[in-house]
Length: 142
Image (cartoon, rainbow, N blue to C red; front, side, top):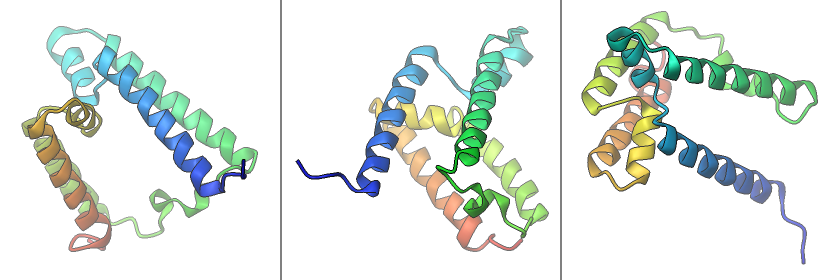
């Protein structure tokens, strides 16, 4: 059997990780907006703690992978010198309103679309289009 290229290995690991995350997110109702809503409306910190744990694990793993040289975080779009604070504020407000109208955060929308929810598929397409406009298009340098 021939050796797989790096691209194939990365795609396989990405698919496996995303598949596992999708199963866990679907079973646990993992959602950023839901975590904040539970805290504000019911005083429950359960989902917010899970969200904070997920964020801490993501930060820890990304820094570990950077330290051992498996990834180069300096090439990330999030470390750009162009801050564009106006675009971030306007985009963040529009994103928050849009995700609330769409029924959840982007991750939850992706899980619902994977489960066959057509409304979530439309929300996901609009989310992707507006993210592209923000990063590369009309709002790129604002």
